[in-house]
Length: 131
Image (cartoon, rainbow, N blue to C red; front, side, top):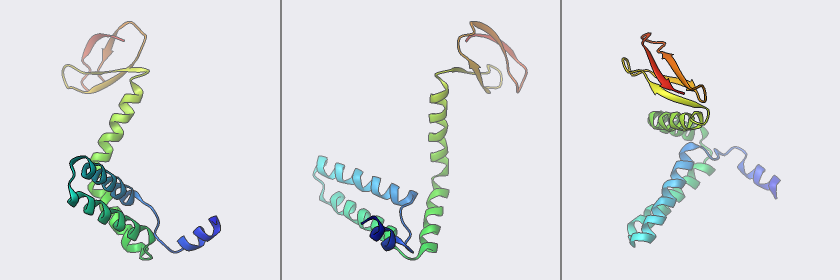
């Protein structure tokens, strides 16, 4: 069975970031349509699902790849912001993150060192904070 699926998908585009976003938008539309009883959202959800499958089974790999690259270029700032927030949240377990009072530069200091004097690497301002 797995080999049949592999042979069927050979030469087809497959799943990518735009496909994932389309499926997520379709699921959100289904949930909203069921919560607020809006039939237009139900039709929109079906259209998004059909479009996602169309892209997945398409043999025009160049065009689907160009669509995905356009999507990635337009959502780069948003994806970068979420990635940064996720990284900062992970670092908060082992580090404190302070802002320099002069230049507002973010400074990462390890936790558990007591009161320490922090020197800003950008403007050389010194300030005391609890680590």
